[in-house]
Figure 1 (spheres, helix red, strand yellow):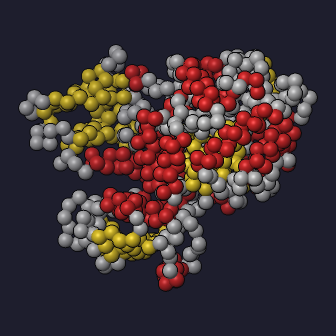
Figure 2 (cartoon, rainbow, N blue to C red; figure 1 turned 180 degrees about the vertical axis):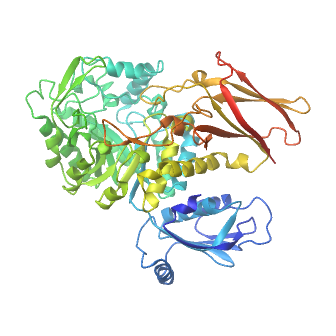
Figure 3 (cartoon, rainbow, N blue to C red; figure 1 turned 180 degrees about the horizontal axis):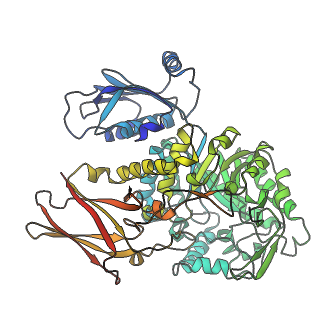
Amino acid sequence: MMEKLNRYEKLEQAGAYLTSETRLEGGNELLHRIAREARSNGKRENFYTGVRFMNAVDEELRSKIDATFGDVYEEHEDGYAIEADDDEVRVYAAGIRGLVYGAYTLRQLGADGFLRKGLIYNVPLCSFRGLKVYLPAQEDLTFFKSFIDMACYYRYNTIVLEVGGAMEYKRHPEMNEGWEAYCREMREYSGKATEIQNGSRWAKNSIHCENGGGGWLTQETVRSLVAYCKERGLSVIPEVPSLSHCDYLLTRHPELAERTDDAYPDTYCPSNPASYELLFDVLDEVADVFQPDTIHVGHDEYYSIGVCDRCKGKDAAEIYAEDLSKIHDYLAGKGIQSMIWSDKLINCISKRGNAYGGAAHAIRDKDGNFIQFVPPTYRAIDFIPRSIRVMHWYWSMPRAYDEEYLSRDLDLAYGNFEGPGIPEWSRRLSRGVQGASISNWSALREDYLQRNGIFFNMAYCCRMFWREGYEEGEFAELAEEAFADLFRYKNLDVLSRPHIEITHATTFNRDFAWFFDGTFIEPERDELGDYRLTFEDGSETVYPVKYGENISHYDRSWTTRMSDEFDVYEFDRSLIEVSYTALPVREGAKTYFRIVLAHPFPEKKLATIEFVPKNGLDDCVIIRKVAVKE
C-alpha cells in the first residue's frame, strides 16, 4: 500500500523476511525498535541476516541512484535510500529524520516481514509537512507520544504546538490560574464556548478551551514532550497567540484589553507598552522551554481594531504591522524566526463577493443583523518584515491570493490544510509554496483526531507530499488507499491474531459536525446499540456500535465538487469521519464499514450475532457480512 509513495524504486519480486534472527546494526535504539515492528511473526527459512542503518549517503550509492533512476539524487535532510540485496538491508540517510522515515518504510512495505530486494530512493516534494495541534491534557501524555510516532510513520517533519495558557509560566503564575478558571467556565457544557463567542455585540475569537485539556502542563513536562519530538527529527514550533486570541493573557490582566467592556477579552491593546511587557515575558519562557528556531505568533481573526482610547483614529494596517514588527524584532534579537497566520494580509473576496481576512467588511449575526465594521488590514503585507514565515489558511479562497505572498518573497505554507480540497496542488507547489500543515482545533485525543478527519488527512496528504503527479480526480482511489492504510495502522495487532470481521452500515443519518471550540464528543448521542455475540457454549461478549466512530450511513459520497462560495473542492466528511477505526468499503451505490474485534474465545465457534438497539433506534443497522479469521 505505502510503497506507492516511493518516488524512485526498482524492486524485484524476490525477497526475504525480516525476522527475530535479523540482526540490527548502526543507528540507535529508536531505529531498532521501529525495525523490530517490521519483523515477521513467525519463523522463516528465507530471512535477511541484518539491517544496517548508515548515517550518510556515500558517493558510490549516489552514483547508483543516479544511474538507476536518471540523475535524481539531491541533498535533502528528509531524503533516504533503502538497498536490499541477497543478504542484508541497508538504510541510508544524512540525519535522524531520514533514518526514521527509512525505518518506518520497512514496516510499511513489509507484508508479515517480507521485503522485496532492490533499491528505493525517496525525497519529498515539499519541505514543510506540518501538523498543528494543542498541547495535550495531563491524562493524554501517553497518547501524545503515540501521535508523534504516527506523524513520523506518515513522514511529517514539523509539529506546531499551541501553547497559550496551557504551559506553566513561572514569571506569571496568575495566568495559569486564570486559564484554568476560564476554561472551567467555558467547558461547563458542550457548545458553551461557541455561545459566548457568538453572543456578543462584536466579533470575538474562537475559544481554545481544549488546549491542555483546559489545564496546564509544567515546563518540565513540556520539555520532555519537545525532546520526544526532536529525538525523532521533528521540528517543533511553539505557537504563542498574540494581538488576537489572547484570552489566556487577559483573564488576569483585563487592564491590557482593547475592549475594556468585554467580559472575556481576547485582544490586547497594541498601543499600551504594558501589553508587550507581559507578552515578551511569555515569549521568554516559551523560548527557554522549546529552544525553537521559529515561534508562531498567531495574528489571525483580528477583529477588535482601533477601539480603545489609545488606538482610536489609527490606521488598522499600521496597527497590525507595528505590532507584528515589534514582536518580530524581539524574537530576531534572540535568533528566532517569526511565523504567523496570514489571513489579515490579503484583501480577500470570495466567489459570491463576500469579504474575509484583511478586507474591510461588516460582520452580521446569523439573522443578518449588523454587528460590527472591521477596518481593512491587508496593506500591512507591504510593511511587515520579509523574513516572517506565513501560514496561509485562505488557500480555499481564490487561488490567485497565493501570489500576494509569493510575489513578495514571503516563505509560504498552507495552514488548516485538507488535501482533497485544494485545486492545482502540483502547480502551486511549482510556484514556490513550501508545503502545508493540517490543523486540529480540538483536544489532542484519538477520538477527536479521528472524527475531525485529522488521521484521514495525515494519510491522504502524505501521498500528496511524497508522490509526483497528484491529480484532484484521484480522490476516490487515494481515499481508498488512505482508508486501507489507516485501518491497518490502527488494527495491526488485532489483524495479526484470531479476530472477527463485521461489515455493516446504518440507516440512521446525522449531518457532519466538527468537534472543536468547546463542542465536545457526547458518546451517549452516538450509541446506536450493541452487538451481542454468542458462542457455541453459550458464552457471550458485547461490542458497542457508535455512529461516527465505527459505523455510518450507507449513502456516502466518494466524489468531490467545486464549492459555490470558495475556490475549494467539497467532499463528504462523514465518509472520512469513521476511517481509522473502520474501513469504508464501496459496494455499488452503497458504502459499508468494516470493523474488527479480537476474538474473545479463539477456541470457540461463533454461533450468533445480534444487534441490540438503544435510544429507540430499532432495525437501524444493516449487517452485510460477518467473518471469523483464524
